[in-house]
Amino acid sequence: MTTSRADVFQELAVVGKAFGSARRLELVDLLTQGERTVDALARAADMGVSTASAHLQVLKLSNLVRTRREGTRIYYRIAGDDVLALYETMLAVARDRSADVHRALEAYLDVPGSEEVGIVSRQDLEDLLASGDVELLDVRPREEFEAGHIPGARSLPFGDLAAAADQLRRSGHVVAYCRGAYCVLAHDAVRLLGGSGIAARRLEDGMLEWRTHGHPVEVGA
Amino acid sequence: MTTSRADVFQELAVVGKAFGSARRLELVDLLTQGERTVDALARAADMGVSTASAHLQVLKLSNLVRTRREGTRIYYRIAGDDVLALYETMLAVARDRSADVHRALEAYLDVPGSEEVGIVSRQDLEDLLASGDVELLDVRPREEFEAGHIPGARSLPFGDLAAAADQLRRSGHVVAYCRGAYCVLAHDAVRLLGGSGIAARRLEDGMLEWRTHGHPVEVGA
DNA sequence: CGCATCCTCCAAGGAATAGTGGAATAGGGA
DNA sequence: TCCCTATTCCACTATTCCTTGGAGGATGCG
Image (cartoon, rainbow over all chains, first blue to last red; front, side, top):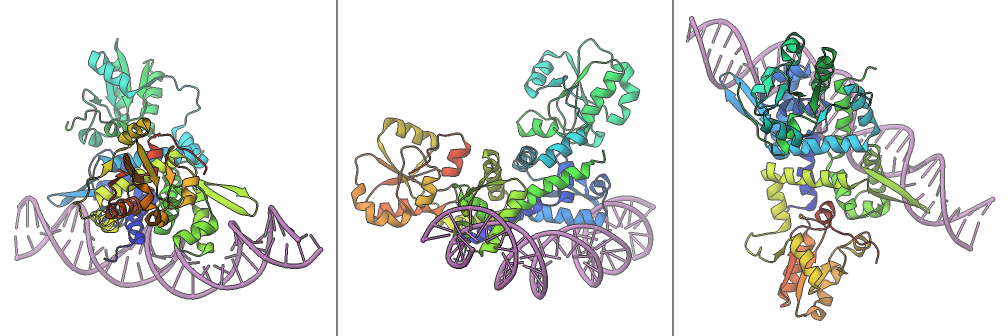
């Protein structure tokens, strides 16, 4: 048997390489929200179909994603929760270790650090849901809502939010969530609702962390 | 501010890239056991000093490792426990997701799957240490022992084990450990001791996991 | 001050990877 | 069967990365 120590690292590096391209990470990020077709991924990440396909092949060869065929189209999805956890860990390390990432994220999220008051933890949300006294808004694209959402949530894509804001006036709590800790949609939703006089809060992180921490997920419309 | 979504992934990919080379992973693996000089790393990983230095620069630029100068030599170390956790998570994902890695690891560890009886979990070891009725052997190179070991362990590098085996006959338990779950030293030590009629067991994983799971670590000789 | 040691930086050739447009393939529907 | 759609495969160029040897820098010692 000629399997050496170096071979182990060689195999291991395949996983690292897969996560070593910005374009691929963008695809992975989209896939954390549920399965998608090649074409949908290419459009969402703004790259050529050939390019997207090539990157997806790399991810598939490293066994980080799986495929499912339905008619003429092929759906890609993350291979398992451990991959989600790895992605999440990587995000956390990058944020804590690199001032650049931290700055990029802050700038991207447009958080001045001041108005960060309306935050609900995952546990708080579980409690609120149990009490029933909460309007939970999933502001991601409907596509992602259908691929998996928090039970009890209502799909209200960010684009439709402004139009629906008026009918949201309620006595109870309003909480919005989106993809993960680094997704702007929930931030923006809370800001928009605030502008309409509705005191909304956002889930601390998002669907990615909800899933990786073992909370229940509902699939379908 | 022109910080876009793509920039975030660009920064993120830096971390991925850092873990995307077999040579670099080999260095990281060595560093999980404690700080080392460039020259020591190059020798241990069997690569040129220039090559090692170049790879270490990449790791340093991605903020995954830090340096410390002592006279003319420079010690590299893992930047924090979160990086250790990331490495551990990556190992786990690679093992579970890739049949190749799994096979490579099994072949490398030379485990027929049968004689896997003498295993002690981290919790069991804590209990044994509390009772005092255990001879705990750290079979890694003395260099790594000094950079951090389990309190109460005795440094007995694998190379010296055969010579010292005779004096190990004891009434209590004998437990060996090495770097991590994928380190052969402890496996081999248990096998060697077994051949000398000493019923030894090995710690389930190793120093890497001991550290990342928050168990106490002692530094020095 | 000169010299030795350890490390980083630089330059260059070779290898691997990314992106792109077009050809080839597979499935579905008329 | 033919056509349409979605995806993969291929060929090509541009770019990036790896490795190596040697020059250059910092530190310590006599």
